[in-house]
Length: 293
Image 1 (cartoon, helix red, strand yellow):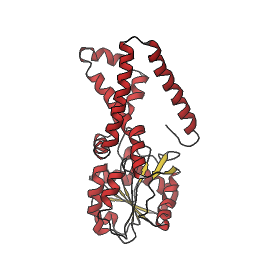
Image 2 (cartoon, rainbow, N blue to C red; image 1 turned 90 degrees about the vertical axis):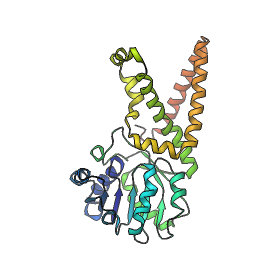
Image 3 (cartoon, rainbow, N blue to C red; image 1 turned 120 degrees about the vertical axis):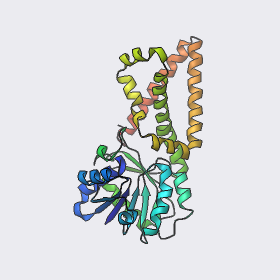
Image 4 (tube, rainbow, N blue to C red; image 1 turned 180 degrees about the horizontal axis):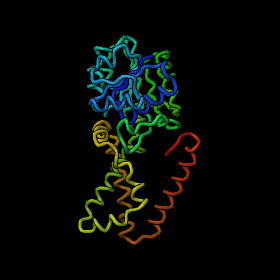
């Protein structure tokens, strides 16, 4: 089997490391990289067997193409590689938004090239193939969008490979994925970046604030160290659901502000108590299904 990875970074590199570990010489992995340095590093680390910036060399004769660039680059990338794909090739992606990509690709993909949308719900604040880990997907949620565009045998061909990651697969439709991702992933990233921005705007107190930073600030802002290009693209392609949830968050914060301004201790207490109770319930529910860390 030949697998082509477009974007051999954290996610693409981790997939390559995992599949080479599980399949060895039974799979040949090629990777599309932008620079000579990233090509050599991807090969050295064992994430791919062959790396190049030549699209035809990477995707030619590939059975499965794993798309892992920033979201807004996925559709243009598919247009570039399309002339070199063989009949029956399977495209899948790791994009954090699904409706935009799926709706754009279905406008021009021929009937003998199949696209099965996916989203591994994993990652780190660090990017690049040097941060890749063969166990990155293990026990993490991995969303697959099961649409009618691919026949069952094509779906199983892809899943036989992806299951080797030992991820916990779940099926959602396009809109539900994007709504849920906005709540549990996209808005939290924006909120984490907002907390860093808030600190940066503390003016004359900034140096004093820096001396007080501990685990709480580090934990709540960890994901603010994620790739800016990736997150800008996510906001542009899932804007409706992100904006809607940000407005709801704004409303919640407004309620807390009012309670504090009115010295309503009970309302503030209830806000924290209910959040703690619900979070504990959620973590208890999912701990046997997924690895939430």
